[in-house]
Image (tube, rainbow, N blue to C red; front, side, top):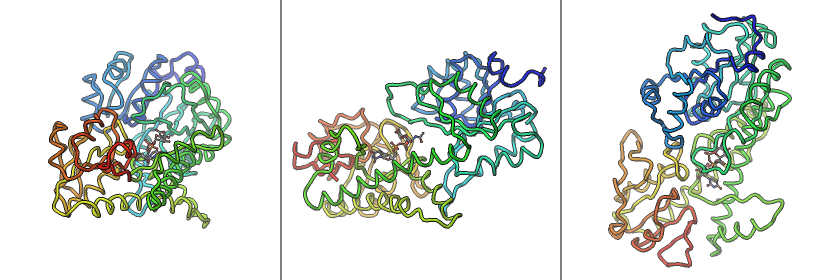
Length: 429
Ligand code: SAJ
């Protein structure tokens, strides 16, 4: 029986509040695991029935979360469902849905709009929504608050908060998710108090932003900072290449400076659903207010040009028609995600003139322009001799790079992980 009389904050403090997490991807699942460790009852919602099945069977749908954690979740009352009416049971509704870009590079908030439409019939007094998806400033208000304030009194009998996710997929961190400081914000002081009392039970450190819009922008700023700095090191790489300097040596030397420098590694361009995407949300807002964000657009352009530069280097060195092996297609090491990965563009361009195969220990198939390409099943190092070139695009840890050097004819090392002084066959790029 729902007892709306008990305040949300008392339910949070007594751990009787039921938590609903919408979107069981790498963000939602990680959050569910972290919250479950604090003995809250959790409903996990996802539209993907196959994913729900996998989770119900105690398996993990993503390689960055192990099945042991899913079994822990199932044991600790996480209930996976696609039945959205259970939202009625939830006191706290945390939304962890994707916010990709549309073809014209403007934010695609369709997942969030669909989410609101599905949960709307089951919203009731004394619930709190925490949006964790990456959005442009003002989106929480536009997509949730404006509609909900027509039915409830925000801060009195309904609470609206924003708290950006800070998951680092695939990174073997020396700390747990609960140790990553959690940014929170709310529309009113009661909203802030509720989300603060809740998240202080889940995370070691909580930082409160004065407004939801500051928190929304902070997330974009963090990732634009990365996109711009990665573009910077990539452009410096191209200049250094011209003058015969290895950029990694420069970054290694600059990193000895104990202050005022943050190292970034040059690469084949940027992939993922954060770094190529999030900064464009700032551009979206800048355009709306007719202010300049060309720094961000230039970074995007440079990162895209870096991928083209690598393709050109390969074409200049390897005769047409030859066989090339792409080593790694994930957008970064040790994960099974190839969204926006530069490897896709490299394969797509090279296969016009070469016989291209790929090997990725985490990804068995990629779809390029609706055509499926399958990874080599097993990497037999001795067979590398059959390729005119091996291109290291993703530097997964579980590859024996000594054998790559031993058995390859030529290696294009786009991650600068090999010491090019070791052998003339290594081309850092
Ligand atoms: N990359 C480089 N050089 C670098 C760092 C990254 O070329 O020095 C490339 C990667 O290969 C990848 C792309 O940039 O293709 C993005 O890499 P990323 O390390 O930023 O990884 P993401 O996209 O998974 O970013 C996430 C973000 N997390 C959140 O948004 C919560 C980001 O803020 C984190 O800093 C990042 O993980 C992380 O540090 O792992």
